[in-house]
Image (cartoon, rainbow, N blue to C red; front, side, top):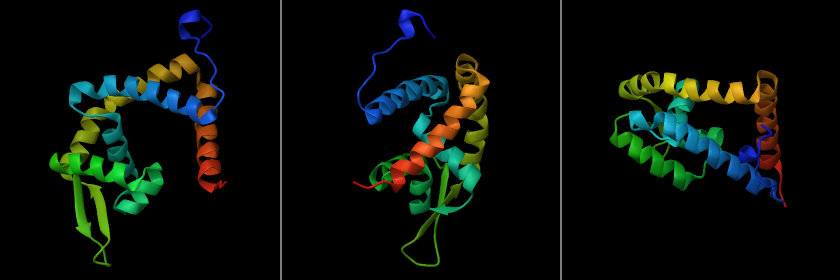
Length: 149
């Protein structure tokens, strides 16, 4: 990726740089998922619930590093689509979330488009760098969540 079109200026802040990268990635994935009426944020929740099974909303927020307000808003949209099942936990205040049958169907229906976006990026970045980026992403997430000022 050395041509001038793909060059972007360095930003002096790692947060700003990662947010810019996240926005660019979100735009790419949103474009792939748009024909299914799904946004990347929604697919990510379907994917996380597919992997985690039934979890509390707090646990889901931790898995995704999402604040409660953003997660609540996105879950409300997804519940209106009947993609998310919600039931009370042992503690009456706890809400447990899982994929509904419709959510599981939507997840599997959309997954090939998501996989196409993944493969496009992987081919542009290269397999070894791709794996390194996943590792670095985990490390940066852990460092940021464990850090305090």
